[in-house]
Image (cartoon, rainbow over all chains, first blue to last red; front, side, top):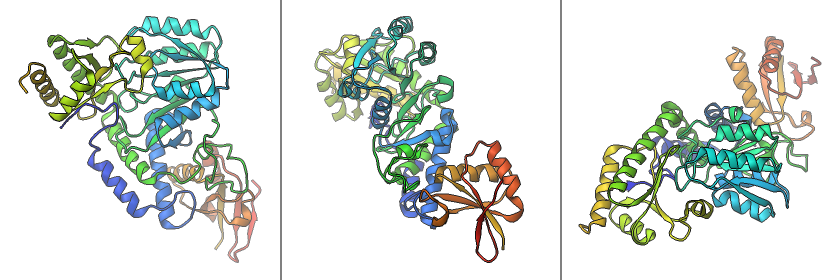
Length: 369
Length: 84
């Protein structure tokens, strides 16, 4: 299988991740609840994962809250910063994990910057939007459809300049690009544990630059007499039993990412994405590529994109077609009616796999398969 | 045997305290805080040997690790708060 759907989840999970999950299931009880050995082992597993994340993302361990997904983290951040009717500034490349929570809250959404790979447009549109003093700004680091890397440091500077708190969706960048809570000055950064961080599905992180409002209420193992959620992190966001096997696996994934470094992983992914883009263009396909692109590339086939993805899948190449849960990004790029075929590279990106994928695709398009 | 223990709001802060003390060369062990001492219910503590208290408190303060209180457990099992 040539797997080019790392934008959905990294696959297969590294053996170290699977071993760590197995170890956690064999040795860990409920963390932060009891004082016996399996509970303490669980607490240590959880804390080691916080430490790994804190070291990678420029924050303190207690600023790392575990979530079940990036979506959960984004919902928490949005519900903390936005009230019904508030104006909120978002980029033209947001996922439904941003758009739907805002819509559900009744926020007044302003879309700023819809030109692909164009930092000048993104920045000037955001600046215009910030002048209207929105309650918050929410933007993605990397478009999950097109791999467009937004100028997040500059956007963060602008938000600070106008006193607007911002949320960064690092779903497609965590593990492939530098992400630093303190340096960016974000109110919140949400990310999944199962994509670039190589952990299992059902894990996510919310990095908290500010004290959030909880999305869930319940037991935390701390301040049990208090009927309100604790007013400190990470307990404030961690009601209920944590996914300790998942967190154990995520710790192992984070260790792998830190060993190689996100920049090196991202460069490898980008190299293969660009090699693919050049080859796709030679095949006469419309390819969405430009400056400031990560390891993801989308293209438009002659016929239906879902049909091509199905035929590729039948021949052992896993890609994703359609709207990728990001209709706004497709609207911005003019592909809402067609969707695209997306190739998203991951930690295992290498020329041999790219070459094999291109051979399968070319044979399909030229009718040799 | 006399020993001290430092109480924390949550297991995460106790763990951060444990890391700070260990990196300062101060031995400690994490345990549940006795219920009678935790007025808000449920918490974790770090137990220290008798001679390490002031060095430990200094290290926690320097490391910005918030802790609640410090207690002394005497050889007869009685416990009393230590005013710092």
